[in-house]
Image (cartoon, rainbow, N blue to C red):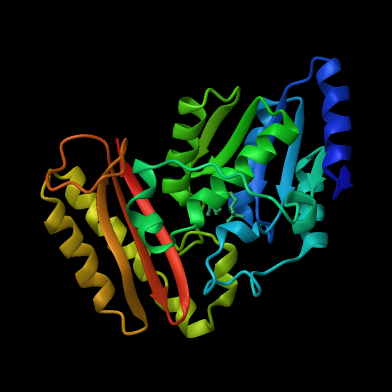
Length: 280
Ligand code: AMP
């Protein structure tokens, strides 16, 4: 497996692979890889001749009060995991390699960024779209793999690709969970043992709500109430948002009568966790 911090080196490899007619799958990550990331890399491995994993904590998608400085990192462990799955290249640039001092070009997706995490993290999705665009250009990938764990991100990237005619196919992958249902996340490592136990409340609340919708509940306010009540019963949890939106435009709805995304963000102590489900 090739490890590189340099854009130029990735481009040289890509040029050679393309010349041989090979297909390329890209898995963009911020590192500290776990089984959620591994599921994306495995799928990319199955569907492409070449697999590129990017491992980059992208500074421009973090707000000033967010956890950029403390975001967990373990590049050696990431390399071992990628190598064990059979990735061909891991791209691990420094911020300076990605952003020149006078960098001033950004990509953004309007409507879909208005609610959910977009409303609470004003710079986040412009930062995501910008770095993802750069990674698409650098890797010239045929396919890119994103987790439903970040459902708003998946929808936004898909829309960006459609609206701007990027030559890449976006593959969405299901959420990988711990045995007790907690969605795997690099940020779970911030939780102390008591918080880790409490964090299961996100999945419990969503499971209850999903069952209600599948049994015929169409009132979005009732769905939000069910979720909020369960989370509020957990003393270590504090709701950031509980939202029910349509799965196309990500706009809040009152009545569930089509594909729906139910998404939540909850602080467990100081750790902000997200989770969701989609009913098509
Ligand atoms: P991150 O490193 O958190 O930026 O995540 C990189 C990619 O992995 C994103 O497309 C995430 O949605 C995906 N991902 C993170 N956690 C999970 C999970 N538990 N299950 C599936 N995909 C995940």
